[in-house]
Image 1 (tube, rainbow, N blue to C red):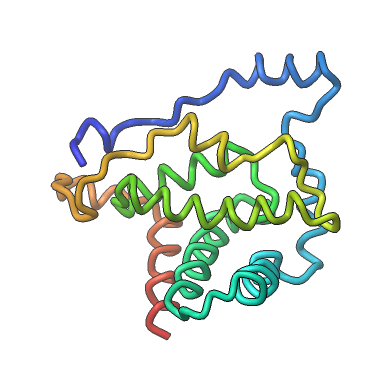
Image 2 (image 1 turned 90 degrees about the vertical axis):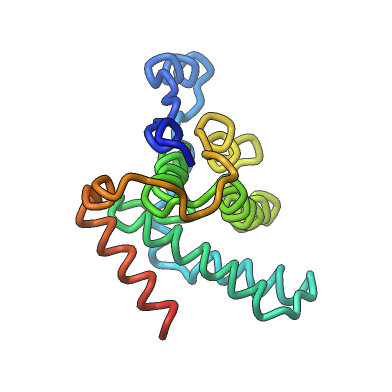
Length: 186
């Protein structure tokens, strides 16, 4: 990853214009926000997807594959926790921030980020077709963020990032990283 790529920011949408469209067509600009609180009192929808779709219907027997899904979902949940929004109810901005976090802090390459997004999209698209979930068919925050956020390059994960930049990691991100690493080894 070049220095230019690591400094790339999200191409933020013009929220004023986006809100104007939402208002003109009587549509919510953040359609999942209203469901976030309710999800906290329900069983984990990511685990539901793993058990009901990946294991039961897809017959995925590889524990490694299931483990990769769970790892991605754990990373996503850790990212969403400080945002006070349930991980099953993100906005495109939440997803863009996740992409940037994986790209810039964890030095994930485009291929790794796409793999993580694909796992998240699979669960989200299942919720869209499952009648018991509130996820609208005409809104996918993961795909919207993928379209407008720089995923980085396909360089090796451990690229040449100046080591003086490694010490400018926000404390919350460092804590999240340590928790992830500890949970991987437990």
